[in-house]
Length: 188
Image (cartoon, rainbow, N blue to C red; front, side, top):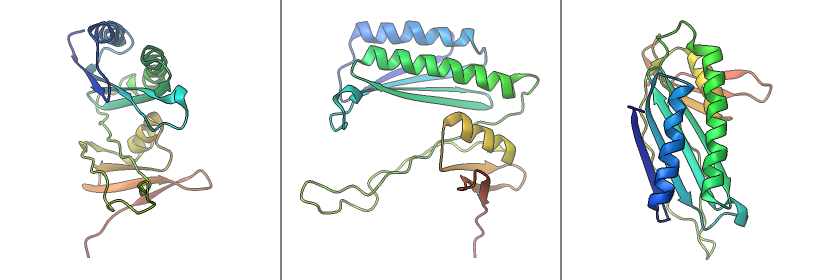
């Protein structure tokens, strides 16, 4: 794989054996989609998981021209979490190719936004209002492409994107009846 590959570990030590295992398996993703520019694998150990079998987390993010795909899986073993996430990524790539890949080179990449609840410490007091800041790249796309990216990324609530047709940042959200709504900010 001549693409950029990044393997990161959080709250755990990344052994050479695990790094080689991840790099060898993730390198095979370009067999499914040739236009992959970057693969990022993040392995982490979450001590505060509700279930002990969900403490090892594997996230895989694949970027290319016009797309971004992401999976996350949890398990009691980092290798099994990664394998499950990789299988899920392969299915997402096949789904993406079926919907977007054929004859289209003008698609744009999307970005992800995570919404978190207000955290409370052990004493029951609220922690700072803004507990996390997240930056992400906005790439211009149409409303239809934003809906498809929202589905591909598995975002159930909302999706922030740059609307290329209206030259503005907008928020796409899913309504209770299954339709989509669009928030178009206007500076007042």
